[in-house]
Length: 122
Image 1 (cartoon, rainbow, N blue to C red):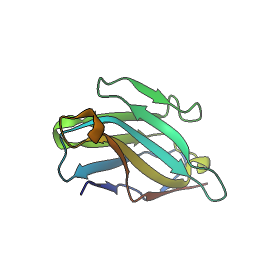
Image 2 (cartoon, rainbow, N blue to C red; image 1 turned 135 degrees about the vertical axis):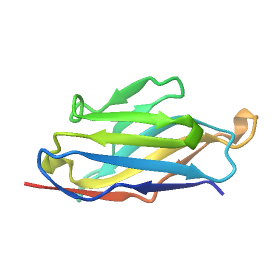
Image 3 (cartoon, rainbow, N blue to C red; image 1 turned 180 degrees about the vertical axis):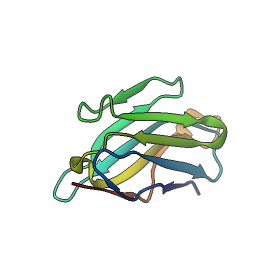
Image 4 (cartoon, rainbow, N blue to C red; image 1 turned 90 degrees about the vertical axis):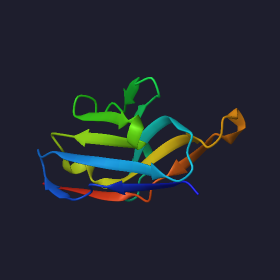
């Protein structure tokens, strides 16, 4: 019932900027943690950034100072603003939401977006 739809992936040149978006639809009471992961060819999926319902953020060391995660609770949307992009940032990016569908704590469940390709040319 809950679906996460991502957008914003595109081919960009090194040093450029890009913003990814991920919006949840369906029967949702609230979204707790929101996060972004990425997976490059031949690599494990890794956590890029996360943000709690209180606005506390965390980032992978490789993107600190270059990426910014933010959220719009009214729209159930998370953003990833990327700047000073490097070829090493090339990957499929996935959003992940910790969602509550009822008032009961037992309804909490994590959902994944479909992934969006970000390619940074050298």
